[in-house]
Amino acid sequence: MNSSAPNSHQENHGSINDGNTGLDSREENENAQEESSHFERKKRAKTSAVWLEFSVIDMADESKKEECNYCKNKLSVLSSSSTSHLGRHLKNCASKSIHENKQQKINFQVDSGSNSQNFTPAITDGKFDMMKMREAAAHWILMHEHPFTVVEEEGFNMMQKCGMVEWESFSRVSIKKDSEKVFQIEKKKLKDFLKSIPKISVTTDMWKSTNQKIEYMVLTGHFVDSYWNLQKRVLSFVHLPPSHCGLEISDNLYKCLKDWGIKNKIFTISVDNASNNDSAVKILSETFSRVKKLSCGGKLFHVRCCAHILNLMVQDGLSRINYIIEDIHDTITFINQNEGRLKLFSEIVQQLQLPHRKLILECKTRWNSTYQMLSAAIKFKDVFPIYKEREPCYQYGPFDALQWWRSNSLKCRILSRMARDILAIPITTVASEATFSAGSRVIDTYRASLGAETVEVLLCGGDWCRSLHGLKRKKKKEKQPVEVNLLIP
Image 1 (cartoon, rainbow, N blue to C red):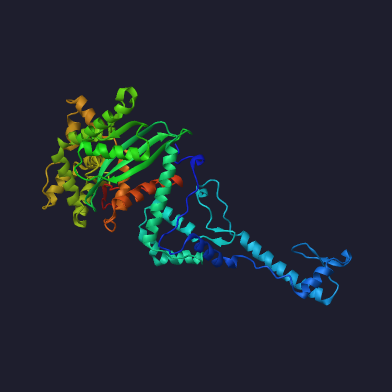
Image 2 (cartoon, helix red, strand yellow):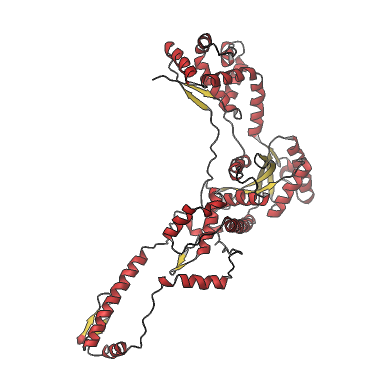
């Protein structure tokens, strides 16, 4: 379903003015009019003798008039002066026609299939509005998670100046303030939009920034709008100071819900299975029960993350064969360490005439990649013993992980099927957890000094601007298992 808000709920953006420019709105308008004066055609004074003569002669006999090919007006030709004026008139009309044709090529009509209608053109009636460009730049930075310093790059300003001679460069400080104003504008619009939503479900999670060494809490709202579209919005991304006990989490969640004016609309809250989350939801449930009646007596209020439960189950099962998984992981790392080792392994595969050509090295934080590593390695079970005999530096234990289940499948019919089925299930994640992938990009090593309020502006504002313009958040380049291609032609 479409995740963007319906057009009927969209409003025009507020204008952005930078307090550091040193100009009030009247001065900016006057300067804009002066700078754009070359777009306006100056009118010819009508007090010359030739013009007066022409005006009188123009009322003469219709049979002695000639029609201008451009403006289609009939002009009299009764004297040398009027003939000369006719020539100038034709020349001016021709020049004006060419100018108008060029102006028609500057087309600001909005494509009905896009969301560009959220912006008014920066050039209207021949006047260039630099503040509209700065507003658009703020949306651009928030949507695509660009650093504030991008507006100070010479190439960026050179490109803008090439297309807009009136372009004025501005600093990262100014665009930061512009982004904060866009954040406030979009927050107000979203708060007004949520007033029409009767029930809202939320998810929340915790994330620690490795660059800042502090922890954040994200709150995401989920609801179905009046057009039956499933909507998702990042509502808050706030710094959560220690300690992270259940009471602290509960207080901060309630503060966020109250700030958005939705504390009486919460239907469910989904969290992972950490004990502090259990305590926080219990406190929230008791708080809400005092002022309103929870649906189904509160039985639906606390929703446990199924993906987290599944992950705990799989990790618990994998821990029983952890020593085997580590041996396989270390073996593949050893083979892939240099070309000589990989070449030797590939030669053995060729000698055994095996059709397989790829090993997979797991990403340890993704249990489904562990399954991919094991399922790929089992295909080379006959290669590893021979490789051990030919490679004197190779020291790891025997390979018997999935082979053991295969060999004992007749004895352990149920357990072997359970192991095979569970290891084949792909992992999922909650929406709040997905927001942290953007957090690692926003709070990179160069931006570790950002304040918590600025981080919320970037994370939430970016989510809102992407929803406003119908864009999907760019996906984080996930850590993928390393594919080790064998040296076989």
